[in-house]
Structures are given as C-alpha cells and as structure tokens.
Image (cartoon, rainbow, N blue to C red; front, side):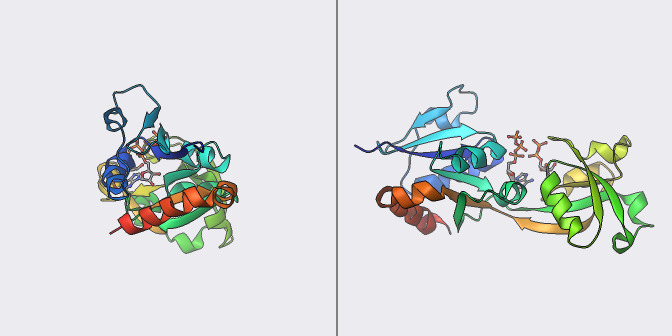
Length: 216
Ligand SMILES: Nc1ncnc2c1ncn2[C@@H]1O[C@H](COP(=O)(O)OP(=O)(O)OP(=O)(O)O)[C@@H](O)[C@H]1O
Ligand SMILES: O=P(O)(O)OC[C@H]1O[C@H](OP(=O)(O)OP(=O)(O)O)[C@H](O)[C@@H]1O
C-alpha cells in the first residue's frame, strides 16, 4: 500500500471545530487525538491510508510546505504571514473565523487618525503581514515580535499599537484597547503541498473533495 497521507491539524481552538469537519469528511481519529492531555503527536484514523499529526498552528504550514505532511488545516492568518509558494489552499473550511486588526489604547484612539501615520511601532505575532499592510500605504512599520499576550504591549510601553486576532473583541476591551483598522478577515483553510498534490493526486484529490463536501 502507498504511504499514508498525513494531515497536520493545529492544537488549540481550531482542533475543536476541526473534529466534526473531519468526521463529515469520513475521517475518525483514534480517541487520543481529541485529548489534549495526550502526549502522542501522531495518530491513526479509521482509514489505514490517513494519519494525523497535531502541531502548533504556525507549524502546520511549515510541515506541509516542506512535504513532511501532505495536507493541513490552518488559519488564513498563518498563510498570510508565511506566504509559502509550496502551499495550495483549495478549500475555505469556514471554521476559526476571526479578523486580524490594528488596535491601540482607547485613550490614544480618541486623538488619533491612522491616515496621518508615517511610522508606527507595532507588537505582533505577524511581522511580515503587518509590514506588508503598512507598506502598501506608505507607512513604515517597526515590528516587535511576540508570540502571545500582545495586548500587554501598549499597557507596558513596549509599543503603542498591536496587530492581533480579534473575534468577540473581549480581549481588547478587557485591556483598554480599541480596534482602529481591520487588515483581513480570517478563517481556516485546507492546505496541500503542491508537489504531493501533483504526484499523489489519486490519493489526495478525493480527500480534498471530501473536505469540500464536508463544509457547510
Ligand atoms: N479568537 C479567535 N477566534 C477564532 N479563531 C481564532 C481566534 N484566535 C485564533 N484563531 C485561529 O486559530 C488559530 C490558532 O490560534 P490559537 O490561539 O489556538 O493558537 P495559539 O495559542 O496562538 O498557537 P500556539 O500556542 O500554537 O502558538 C489562529 O491561527 C487563528 O486562525
Ligand atoms: O476577540 P476575542 O474573542 O477576545 O479573541 C481574541 C483573542 O483570541 C486569541 O487568543 P487566544 O484566546 O487563542 O489565546 P492565545 O493566542 O494567547 O493563546 C487572539 O490572540 C486574541 O488574544
């Protein structure tokens, strides 16, 4: 039999929404996959030709871009940050919906006009996306890379603005910040390694179709 297709799935919030989607696509992982306390990283499924790996959100794109996994589920925020040419993103899965936005303290926003910025200092997990966004309108962005808790940066004087994910807006509100610009709407995508998609299309093509049919 051909090697199993490996699908990379992020830990954390997307995992919960991905499970029903996998089930509708006919893929039922072994029970340990849904148990974040499990230390296992690779999991079998009801299909001997498919196995799953559970990795950090940003690493899903890296595993698939390098062909270590053939398919993956990842937020479009991650795809925008990396911009890997080896990745093909054929299906919008409609889960993990949020937006990537610029935010700043409410006190600053009251006096501020983003159209007048020529230089900004921004704390973010998304430096490439942030620089591209600001460059497109002639603003130079100096980025401080953080991996989480961006909302602390303005409170502690690390930077007056942040670029982060916003969903309900609760995290911003509870830290005295307001959204001043939406950069992009985000949802999770099914991604495929382009070379694997070409060379293993009899295996991978029907799987992509199954995910497409599972989205509702
Ligand atoms: N509040 C949110 N609402 C909806 N989707 C979100 C939200 N926050 C993040 N996401 C989506 O889920 C993905 C993973 O985010 P999550 O916060 O679970 O990971 P993380 O804790 O930042 O990752 P890691 O710990 O692996 O670095 C993001 O890339 C984004 O696409
Ligand atoms: O607008 P809200 O509904 O408050 O959601 C936004 C928050 O969700 C995400 O963080 P998450 O909860 O995943 O935590 P982490 O990134 O710090 O792990 C994101 O980084 C924001 O902090």
